Image 1 (cartoon, rainbow, N blue to C red):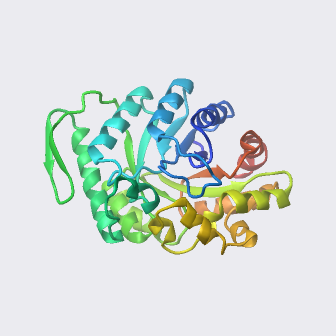
Image 2: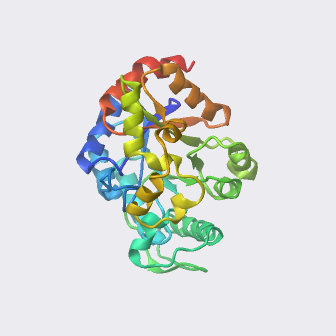
Length: 318
């Protein structure tokens, strides 16, 4: 698998466009993609949020080689882990050997919609660990029951199981979650090249399992226009601290984004047509130990972005 894949941004694009982007990525030689799983976009400007499992069905039927994973699904509050286990098994059966399930602790933005209390970070991680146990047990086949601290499953059987079963990768933004990914996951997903995350994953049992890092870019032939687009469409990139997990509504992110400047966003989202700047950002992830980097093109120009990376960026990685 080549080291560079793409991100399919459910927050920005309607379902049929996401399917088309997956087709185009495959046609241009990209080997994998991760698709976000949201109930709400981060801001109203982004404007979309289709149900990821329906979109994955469309991608399964219109691609032949592209490997696709969720980046990432929260299997703890909005969706019971038994339902995620069934959904992922079905997609795995539709694209055998090409689907992997990425899971994480989620954001209040998406999970509060069912009226449940938003737990503390430590509790969310404990819930995720138990949810992974539920999913793996149901993937064993046969009649299964489970009674844990957070979840109960009674006489459940997933009849449609794929062969092979999907890999289950766990998202981490800190060392504690990376250790969980190393102990319980088939791979690691992260969104920043923080020092120590990959090491924590590998030392906790991750070994040589795959590691995925996400990069945000805004390709445009006009750098000023790219910076403006990144600031308008993806200001959440520069919102610091725990707000990304704690704020419940898109309008709250928009209010926080009022305190974020165009320069703030451009420090974190590579803007413009200079391939060396894109390469520098990719190399930060490879230097931090990530084996695979998937790139999120902010805004439109999706096909131009794919062409640019195929022509100017990937061949120069060495």
